Length: 299
Image (cartoon, rainbow, N blue to C red; front, side, top):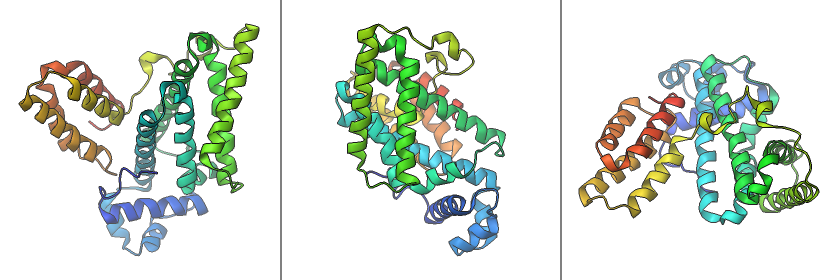
């Protein structure tokens, strides 16, 4: 499994972040003090505060760090699995994260984040909405328009199965491979979809059922790394001149470097956006990228 942040984060910041994840997983977020994190890292408490102003900020960066890893896994799955097997790839991405980073998921199962900062709660709401929308979209891509009317109940079933297998990995230490588990979930979904479509079942949920959530397409938050990947592919196939291609590709590279950092520097991100804004042919994707960066509180 690829760790896209490997080598990109200062060693001390990485040590603090990963050590805090382990402590929060074993002892709990509320019960763990910054002094204990410092002791675990074998550094002074003051050194921690040079990078994270509070425990809340540290927790937020933990979630952002692992979310970046998850988005990278989704991108890898998109390249590795055909359109017909896209659902399998998404399931593999979810289970791989859980299998390889169990402390992060253990930390989440210990207690909810109702005690966290407003910024933290906003970020979690965003990624939850995005992940649910991802499942809904992937179901339609994988099974076609016949599954469209059932996507809400199918999404909830799929989410439940993925969560159950994650629980087996983390809480029960089940010796199951990611690929085998993903295949089992995917095959179960095949049978469910076939049964619903064949029997012309009446959908249990409708668009109106979820009117208070952000699962409609217009509210679907897209991760900036997804858009930088799309922009790179667009530029490769475009008729931009050599100078414009060089500006865009170098700006994308710097942007992705920053986005994978624990504490992305807004001044760098803003500068790269200005570079992209100057290229007229990419304005559609540029505007989406700018909006995504605002949604994720990076600019």
